[in-house]
Image 1 (tube, rainbow, N blue to C red):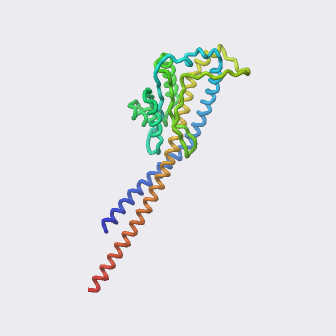
Image 2 (cartoon, one colour):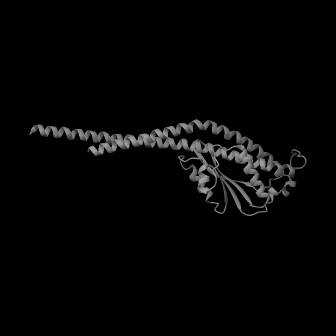
Image 3 (tube, rainbow, N blue to C red):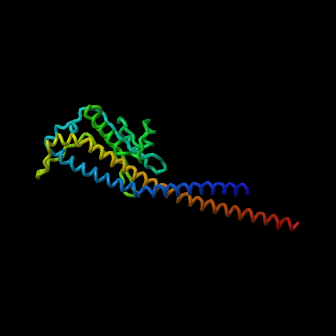
Amino acid sequence: MGADIKSLKIRIRSVDSTLHLTRAMGLVASSKIRRATRSMNQTREYAGAMEDLLKVLRAAPECERSPYMRPVGTGTRLIVIAGDRGLAGGYNANVFRLAATVPEAEIIPIGKRACERFGKPVISSERFPVTDARRIAEEMCRDFLDGKFEKLGILFTRYRSMMSQEATLEWVLPLEKMEEDAGAGPVFEPDEMTVLNAAVPTYVCGVLTACVRESFASEVAARRMAMDSAGKNAQEMIDRLQLQYNRARQNSITQEITEIVAGSGL
């Protein structure tokens, strides 16, 4: 009986340590949520503005001759954005599961977990500067024009709400033709195709930055929810173990009293 009580005390202490850890990680995630969502919303607006510009340009008949709309290469490149750390529920697993649906793709990973999985130098998803986004975007556009691949996609996690995040694959290159607007549109100088070709690297940079920021916001939200769930589970386990411990102590005391009474009767 004494061994059972000691074992229960050790387990309660162990689960209590886990509870403190999950609470601390939950608080850290909570402190990052506001900054992450603000940054996500700002880059969403920028990427949305660039998308609106390219929609107008892609509708111009002249732009059909743009090399960004007429791929010459073969193969697929996939920029896979995952987290720098784990303990975020199924956040990283969902990204890798979706990446596995494009088995022949050449992977460009962002985020420590993605870089480790695909054996590439580490690029942080939390601290991802615009300079890195611009470098990657320019490299992707240059290789696309050189015919080194045919399609470029970005695999990231879309932020729906604090409760919901969804792994998403968005194709960036080649650009798709848009229906021509019958109304009067803006005038581009020197011409639409020149502006389009000059704008595409900036567009890819903006989309990539927005995807990384949105993925990080999703990671933080997923970790907060995972830590809340783990904390509740740990507390429930402590309550069950505490009940078992109290019963074991009560049985031990009862047995001691019985032995004392039986001994005094002799």
